Length: 365
Image 1 (cartoon, one colour):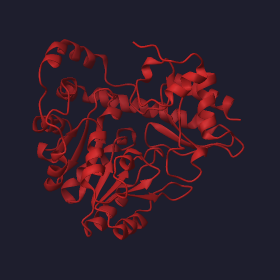
Image 2 (image 1 turned 120 degrees about the vertical axis):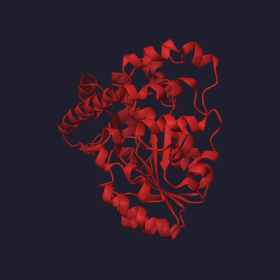
Image 3 (image 1 turned 180 degrees about the horizontal axis):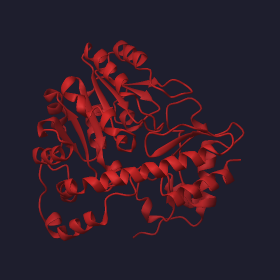
Image 4 (image 1 turned 135 degrees about the horizontal axis):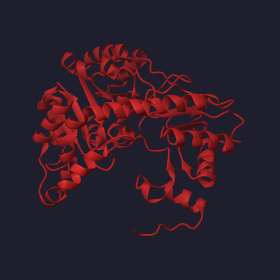
């Protein structure tokens, strides 16, 4: 492995802050990226090792067969599913090639805006300071701007807040009258309470302008395998997305993971419960820090506003890394008011979360 070109912790911070992955090579505690630490179990890795020669030497399967594998796990027919090399591949197709005008509440996951050509994106500010989505106002803006795709991330990134299912159904109905597809990004929904009853996956047959997008990389802890999917009963829309997918977009390791995943459903459910226990304890400890505003999380990360007297978000992030070797995200790159006052902190193990709380109090001022 090439030795990174840094000599001090401050130089290491400057290097890491420009990276988009590969963090495991650099020996620090990663409270920035958002994934399930408790899945997959070791048995999954053993299965992949058993097949490594075949997976490396042979072509993987293509889209139709991949959709059948995902469909078997989520209990939906393959013709309603498009499988992506991570959700990012599908976002690139949606924002960059299909949408004439895409509207999204902000702050949110930046890739939807980053992937869109100039002039093809409308950013709708969430209610401030609650960061709640007013679906009536959002629908009005979508219709006024002529959006043909509206995206809602629920739970949202970075706010970690759900949009109530009743609001999403209302939004789908309003947008359907104006030929606007509603994409619900449920990448973090597995960490929310009562997941089965709040997911829109079970509603797609009822709303022809509805599609669900999900990154499996996050909830299943497989960031390196890159798997995501789009689910919709709108076959014309699914076909349009599928046109942008390369024939072998998923590698053999990701395919094999999808094949064996149904054998580990209970382990996955248990892992999400453990994530929620750690997150809830983490939330309570963060709430005890004087002056800080902590938003109640529905995902596996927590959105915070620093006290006015505290250092700025970027200053806190750098001090935390330089002095404690812990990396979190500030929200300066997000479209929102007072972005430099906000942090997004991923929940990890109980011990790591406790260390983060102590370190944050140490560097805030």
